[in-house]
Length: 174
Image 1 (cartoon, helix red, strand yellow):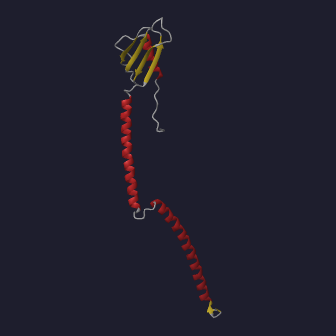
Image 2: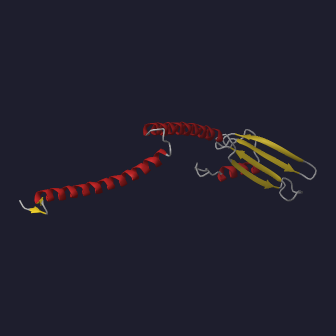
Image 3: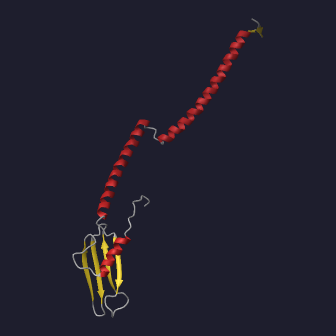
C-alpha cells in the first residue's frame, strides 16, 4: 500500500481507529463517573451519614422500628377500645327543665336534671324551691324509667336528654 509521510496508510487507519476508540471510551468513562456521583449522593443521603453501617443493617433497623410502631399502635387501639367501653357508662345525655313548683314563687327556680349514659341509665335530680324552703330529690333511672314515680318535669328532662344526644365519630384530628 501507499505511504503517507513515511507511515503506511494501514498504520494511519489503525491509529485513527484506536484514537476514535479511546475517545469513545473516554466519553463512556466520563458518563459513568457522572452516574456514579449521582448514585453515591443518593446512597449517602439514604445512609444519612452512617458510614460504619451497611444497607442490610439499616433495613433491619427500619424493620425493627416498624415493628415497634405496630406494637404501639396495637396497644393504643386496645386502650381506645377500653376507653370506648368505659364511656358507655359515663354521662352522655343531659336534659334540663326549669319550672315553677309553686304558684307563689316566680322565675322558674325549681328544676329537674336528667343525667344519662348511652343506655339511658343514670339519675334524675329535682330541686323544688319554695319561699321558705327548698328540697332536692334524686331518683335512679334504668333504661329511661325509674322505680320511683316521676313528675311531668322529670319525664320531660329525661325525654330532652334522650333527644339531644349526638354521637361523635372518632377522628384523629386531635
